Image 1: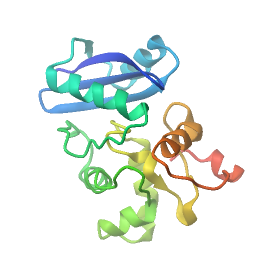
Image 2: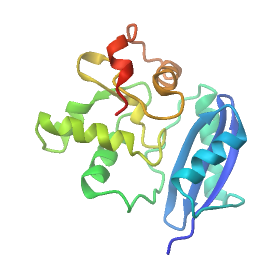
Image 3: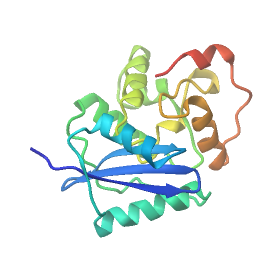
Image 4: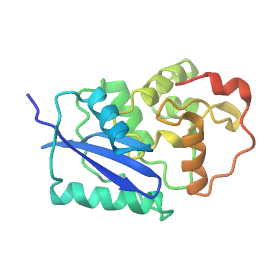
Length: 185
């Protein structure tokens, strides 16, 4: 059985948590308002994990996350991840999405096409985003619905978090369509 450790830390946007194994970063919790809430959310996703002091490579990721939420362009595309528990299609989506850089966006449909799937796979891409074990590191906030609409965002804070992260990266979109707020991909 894989051993997972986690660490809760403060960023300019709130408290985050990161979990890791010998294979790499395995979970990430986007900011919440309290360390306790962040820890609860992390343990809900990875109940067998135990709190630990970050290894040097994890400390570097924590520093990069803090800089990211401070508005400094940061990319996580070369970071080792332990996401072997995700199905092969999801891993393919995540790999493609990691190539979408700071300040750029893509759509559910475009990610499906990149994997050679038809437009009907856009819903499956949405499912992958909702199950993303390491949001920010796999930048699901950069995925939009057709027509440049925000789409859904099931992470803590919902669409407001997604909008803040995109704004932090300099992405400006129009006002949110209220009908889109009901969806959480």
